[in-house]
Amino acid sequence: SCPRLRISAAPSLRPLRGIPSTRCHAAAGDPAPAPSQAPGGARAALVRVGEALSLGFPLWVASACALALWRPASFLWVTPTAQMVGLSFTMLGMGMTLTLDDLRTALLMPKELAAGFLLQYT
Picture 1 (cartoon, helix red, strand yellow):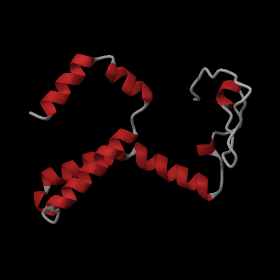
Picture 2 (cartoon, one colour):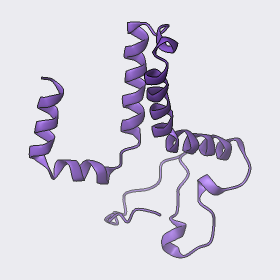
Picture 3 (cartoon, helix red, strand yellow):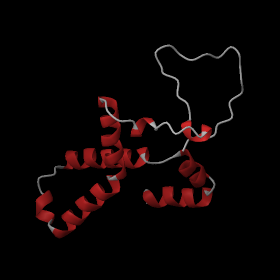
Picture 4 (cartoon, helix red, strand yellow):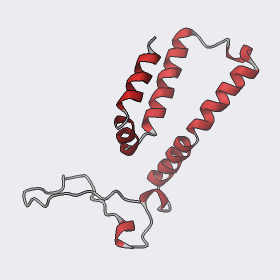
């Protein structure tokens, strides 16, 4: 689905050169496929791989946690530096799955947000 944005029509605004304009097909009722569903091309393949990795991210993290609990010796090769890098990528991946609605919802609960922040560092 396409987000419905209210954009004021300013005559001085024009599309940037080199950046393709996009059109929301879902809002117009147009049956044209979304870019992630368009057949063929390297870009479409990259989008499909990115979507699969993004949707499977919680599964990858949960699988690694389960393996570490089941066979802790299998993670002895992980150095402290590699742990920090891995945790950084994990947090980055989790942050990339958030939407503006998720952020808006979190900001509507300032007490819970502050409690989580304080408990994380104590």
